[in-house]
Structures are given as C-alpha cells and as structure tokens.
Image (cartoon, rainbow, N blue to C red; front, side, top):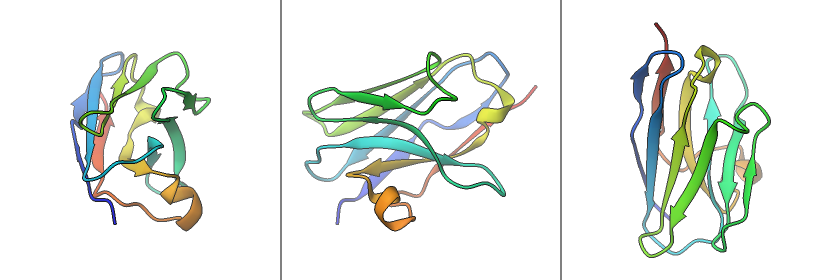
Length: 115
C-alpha cells in the first residue's frame, strides 16, 4: 500500500495563503486532496493526474491550485484567499482511495483559518 506524508498545515488569517505538500512512497497516476470539517462529510478539494489534468471542488475553484512533481511523486496544494469555511483536516489521496473506500490513507494536516 502507498504511504503518504503530508505537511504544510497551520493557522492562517482570512485572506492568507498556505501551501500543502504530500509525498507518496510509490508511483501513482491520480493524486489529490480531500478535506473534512468537524461534523461534515469529506469534500473533494482537487485532483491531478500524472499528465497534469486537474479537477477542483466548486468551493475552491479560482483560489486553490494543485500541482505535482512526478519525479518525486509529490503533490502540492497552493491555497490562496483562504476563508474560515476552508478550516478542515486536509487529507492527501491517491487513485481515488477515499472515493472507493470512504477512508483516508494519510494522517491529514489541520488547516485553520481564523482571525
């Protein structure tokens, strides 16, 4: 099973930016991010294929950018214009694992947007 190491979460003020990173232990095609806020279901943030095709959740379009370094099997999530409603635990995902199982592979990283 692929292992994931996420980093980059933290506390930021509304309107600020954060960058998340996730390194996978093996070669994968689709990488992405989901998030889950307390009391809510998991939500798609963004996905990216090996050849660069991206897909974004509606609430983050235009504010977040997903990218990847295929040589390092690392995916990044640049989050700009953060809002309090972006507060959640962000989980890295590969090959649609969360969609198929409802679970998360990584340990998640907390993002808190608050003044």
